[in-house]
Amino acid sequence: MIADPAPAPRPEGPIRRALRNAAWLLGGKGVGGLFSLVYLALVARTLGVAGFGIFGMILAYGQALANVVGFQSWQTVIRYGARHRADARPDLFAQVLGFATLLDFGAALVGGVIAVAGALLIGPVIGWSHDTQILASWFGVSLLFGQRGAPTGALRLFDRFDLAAYAELTLPATRLAGTLIAWALDGGMAGYLLAWALSELVTTASMWWQAWRELRTREMMPGGWRLRGLAVDNPGIWRFSITTNLTASIGLVWQQIPVLAVGGIAGAAGAGGYRMATGLGTALTKPVVSLARSIYPEFARLSVDAGTAALRPVLRRTALISAGLGILSVLLIALAGRQILLLMGGPDYVFAYPVLVVLTLASALNLVGFGLEPALVAVGRPGAALIARGWATLFYVVALAVLLPWMGPIGAAWATLAATGVSLLLLWRAFVRAG
Image (cartoon, rainbow, N blue to C red; front, side, top):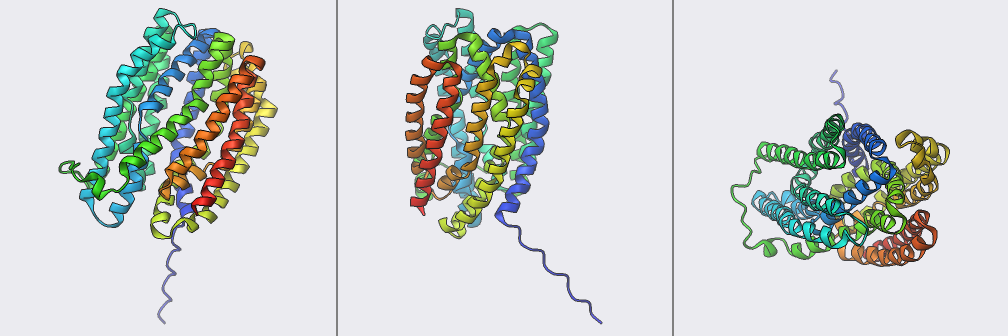
């Protein structure tokens, strides 16, 4: 008797594939998260709450600058590379990859000049000494050369999240090593900033090495990046790249600007507490950030194959997953937030507990609609995402300007929570209209 053939394996759906890819990202980020707790606590305890506040403000300045000038080139690689990959056109894929690489390097060069001028201009306004302005200038320049969107996009498009995870693990590992060396040598704030900067550069080199090997394995190595005819072969690529950059730049208002604003209004100690609360609050959302990054390529493939309607059931399922994680995050912080702050920074940081609770609520709310913006970008509507984020950010700026001087750091946290709700509603409205 001839045995029945084994049933063919069920095709892997976008949610399952995204979860598998997110697991790779989380593997690296899980280990990296443990490392980050060590070096964050070490810096916080060594510098004290006021010194950590200055340190956090310099970090916020450098990261804000990198967000402003840096293009989200990985989204461009996935958006346009997905079509060329499906059409078996490695020459056009190489064209997109070369364009994304030039965006990364061009942003770094232009941003280097802005980094120095910006630190000297805003430093006196927020109470920085001349030495602090110099540190912020050099740190801003170093972060700009950590742009790695092009290789990241290539690895994600080829479904090699495992390689991307290995490369991204380089960041916390080298940062921890550098922080320990700076601590052992009593390098102070300058030593810690140097550790942060070098880790970015080493991670960029690692990401490019992994991407280069994958391109060579798939015989997709660019023999030469031909940019002539870019806009013809990739309609709308300039508009897409600029729009996604503007959308990401708006995000800095939510992430880095509050730390600088709190420092200017409440002083360095207030900025230190707020920076600690922000770091812990956002750390709890990193699993869903990983899921968002892993699901964007799936959205891009679905939009190419089946259109916008196919994204809706995927969005519903991811929203349920992220909502559950958000609820767990809020419960954890409500019950153990004070103990976490005490463990990380010591008694001087416990005053930030109410700020931490409100920021965690905002993060949990943001998790519910995390897939809306990637979905809009995947279907070629980054402008709709930009408009929604723009209106929500305008609301946030007004709320921050009113509540921060009135209530102090907790006012900045309440502004974040309210604006997150507005952003979620506007993004959902934009997605419904896009369908």
